[in-house]
Amino acid sequence: MILGTAGHIDHGKSTLVRALTGIDPDRLPEEKARGMTIDLGFAHLDLPGVRVGIVDVPGHERFVKTMVAGATGIDAALLVVAADDGPMPQTREHIEILDLLGVTVGLIVVSKADLVDAERVAAVTRDVLREAAGTSIARWPSVAVSATRGDGLDELRTRTRELAARVETRATSSVFVMPIDRVFTKHGRGTVVTGSVACGSAEIGQTLHLMPAEIPVRIRELQSYGAAARSAQVGRRAAINISGVDRVSPGRGDVLATPGYLTPTRYVDVRVRLVSQRSKPLGSHRRVRVAFGTREEMAVLVCVEGAAVPPGDGAFVQLRFAKPVVVRFGERMILRDETACETIGGAVVLRVVSRRIRPARAAINALRALESADAIVRIREVLRSAGFRRNAALELACAAGVEPGEVPTLLDALRGAGELRRVGAFEVDRRVVDDVRSRALTYVKRHHARTPTEPGVLADRFVGWLDRRSAAGLGRFLLQELIDAGELVARGPYVAHREFRPALSAEDQALAERLVAEIAAAGLDPPEWSKLRVLAGLSRQRAAMLLELARSEPRLVQIGPEEFVERRHLDRLKDVVREVGRGGRRFRLAEVRDALALSRRSVLPLLEYLDRTRFTRRIEDMRVLAESAS
Image: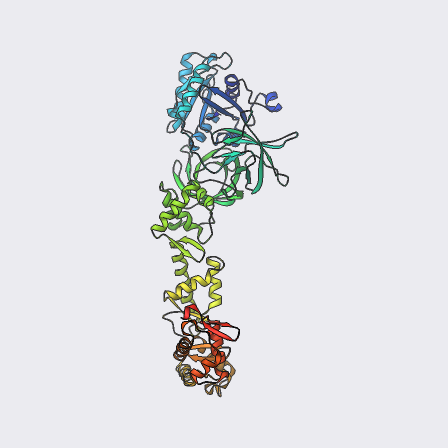
């Protein structure tokens, strides 16, 4: 169990830890000189059947961010209140912080009990419970102690052991995460970082990532509670000697984690809850200080539902950080005002990596899905928001708040329910594919409305549009899906909606019909474009327009730069070639020439077209039917 202290300055937290453990948590010369804790202190207490790691925090209002860094990750807390002073400003603020961090197990310790009578101790206890009304701290038992005389310390040890039995056992995990709360250099060993292990375990020789810089580091040595250890375990304090930090200096707030698990981001979506004592709502686009893990960063809070968050109430908000951060699903945060004068509220992480979002019903519904207790619902929403981006199992696990080993089973369940679609090499949420297809059809229709005389959208341009809205290389796959589904039609180098026809004048329509008739009459021996009779007397501009019409005309097929064949004649060509190459037989150009009773000059471009479209395959001076043609 990891136990944290909390309470106002000079209420005896460090003195109590020293009396319980024999270890002085105040390690800095300045702390000893001033008699005031200004940084985190650490000790440990061995009780029958349990080792308790203790994090001692400063009580001064200027060091609340340090207090939060120490309180994050603790299993239980000792709220220390001096019997002579009673509850003070930081007592109230620390109660709020413990409640917002979800610390539900602890003790109220009335210190300096030797300075007052029993009636005063009882009165102070009642005052603390009154301050803690509405929080989990209001249900904590209390014990009165005197650290200087030793009164009540045995009872406190007994109660602490009872706390350990009430603390929920942390689940084992295949991923390791440890927020760093202290960094120092040891002569002959190099950089050492310490922290409370949030999840998983790590062993000597293992490679981790220092986040958010994503620097790989290797574990050289390990200690836990002052003794050498082979591994760092969840729920324990650890000191880790690391190598590989020549290019960057680790600091408090950084995180050691399994490679690939955490992802740096500047946008995090959370549910925020304001403290009930706050007098006015919290408006959108407000700068706040956000404390999480062992880090504090400035962020802009943007409301996702409503224009403001009422006091004592909760709402979805987006935190837009000034610097990249790393968080886990379900991680708790403390929000303070920009000047660090008051605690505003707390937050729970829902989307670990987000992008700028605006207040909208869709955004609210998405965050409600991430709040679901059903892991299937959460991972489905993670996949939807990821779009066409590939997600490794570790990333999905972090974002959905599940173990990496559970991810394959959850994905199988989604596949079985038809919720996943394979698009090329990608497997994505079905709604993502439906959305991009719907947007693609809207794009094509809008193009037709703007340019009704054009045959459609150039296919290459449309593929680029699809690539930018899905992933590189998926545009052609998605286009073919739309064509196969009959939503779009390919007309030469153009793509058009199935219901669209270019808006031609009566004169242009008649010209197009003459063109089709002339090409149809030529059969499989088409004339070059420049020699078509229909072009005689046309201006260069009108001839170019007619060429674009020919390329998009569904009755015609362009087999060369300036050669077109009517589609029904091309079908006849394929039937003849299919007969010549029956049974996988190789054949020469002359055989097709003779079967069609055409010249070599006419047959050559026809066969070259069939080669390009993979109807046939050339082998030296012979050809064979491709598998798709047989």
